[in-house]
Image (cartoon, rainbow, N blue to C red):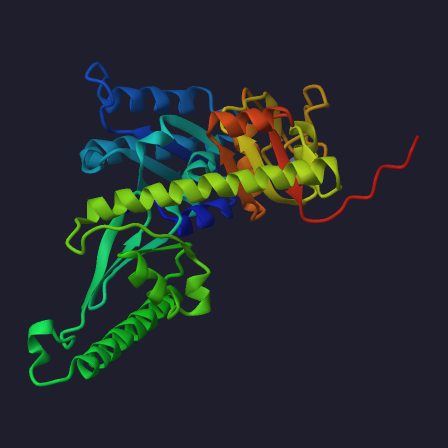
Amino acid sequence: MHISRQAVERLASYHSPEWPVISLYLRVDQEHITDDHYSTRLKNLLRQASESPGIELSRAQVEAVEADLERIRIFFRDHGDEFGQGVALFASSQAGLWEVYETPREVGNSIAVDFRPAIAPLVRMLEQYEPLCVCLVSRDRARIFTGHLGEFSERAVKLDQEVPGQHEQGGWSQARFQRHIEEHVHQHFKRLAIDLFALFEQEPFRFLIVAGPHEVVSDFLEYLHPYVRERYIGTFYVLMEATAKQVREEAAKIVREWTRQEKQRYLDLLRHEALGNDMGVTGLAKVIEALQMGNVLSLIVDDRLEAPGAYCLHCGVVQPPAVESPELCLYCGGPVRRVANIVPEVYANAYRQNANLVFLTERDQQGQLAELGGIGAILRFRVAPAPES
Ligand SMILES: [Zn+2]
């Protein structure tokens, strides 16, 4: 099964205090001809999880982990070649968890033993999974595509059989014939708008793109239900006979440009709030503090940012960076795990709090955020300033 937004949400809320969860990410395709077969990488990852899980486990927990590592090894022996690019696997058999997803190759290779699934690599990719609807429209036809940028397919072809061609004008006057055609076009747009609204109610899409001749598109937009119209982000022109691949490529350009502009709006808002108001914070320490208070509405982060840190294995809270090597969680007293890069834990936690995640991948925008510490958050509520001491 392909990874989906729903699956990520489910995994994000999963917590098993008793039984450890193994999270495995494995690239199964070959990037370079010199790449070793994935089975070698898998063997190394399984050994790593067995020899240094990075957390203290009871004897029963160690046995549960070993049993799952063996189950994973057998699974890949029997089914490894059935996957295209990458695999994400989550196992805690004692707790009844065993989920395997096909993923894009970008999730890389890693393994983790924890009491929560390691969701950061999936969370990082979610923006590629925004549900998208593309509607090709002409005066008598339409094609509807749905999916996301990774997986995209045609849903329906609408053909108004009744729109008469010019050769059928017969004895009608030109004016009357024209009105007759306009009425068909009107009915066609109306039905199509109803279909799109029904589709939207069934599977809400984040983005709508309407493609076709300029004046047809602008006429048709008037017919859309306001909820559907709100999702409209742009248009392009292709022939009605275009392939799904052509449609997806054109749609991707529009989504990318829209996303780039949206990221810029977040950056501007962050700068405004952090400098002028008090509904924004910048820099890793302040973001971690806001996160601990459940106060992150939107997290804006430079994709390349890395910093060491620690988080609690029990309550999951990222520890304040100012505290030197905390042995125990400052909030619950649970065991903490130190990691070379805490940033993925920060955005996974922000995701668990339903924050919007904004990853900056373009040099220009990364440069703007660098001036603010490479990371920032727009807050949910205003925090009273600390009393002067
Ligand atoms: Zn804790």
